[in-house]
Amino acid sequence: MELEQTNTIKYRQARKRVKELKGFYWHLAIYVLINLFITINKVISNYYNGQSESWSEAIWNFDTFSVWIFWGVGIAFHAINIFGYPLILGKDWEECKIKKLMEKEEEQSKLFRK
Image (tube, rainbow, N blue to C red; front, top):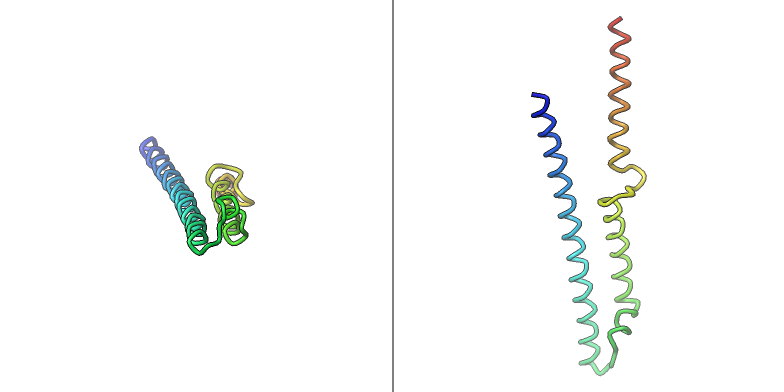
C-alpha cells in the first residue's frame, strides 16, 4: 500500500514538473516569435516609409531593444525558477521546511504521549 502511495506521489510530482517545463517552453517560444515579429515589422515598415534601416539598427533601436530586454529578464527569472537556482524561497526550501515542521510536530507529539 505504501509503495502505491509513493508511486502516486512521485507521479504527481513528475506530472507537475512536466507541466512547469511545458509552460516555460511555451513562454520562450512566444517570446521569440512575438519579438521577431515586432523587429521584422519595424524593419519592413521603416523600409516602406523611406527610412532605410538595417536589421541591426532595428534591433538596437531602444523601442525594439527594450521589449527584448525587459521580457528577456522575465524569461530569465522563469528559467531560473524552473531549471535551478530558485529564488529566495524555491522548491527545495519548501520541501526542507515541510520536513522540519513534520519532524518537530512528531517530536512534540512524542513528548505529550509520555
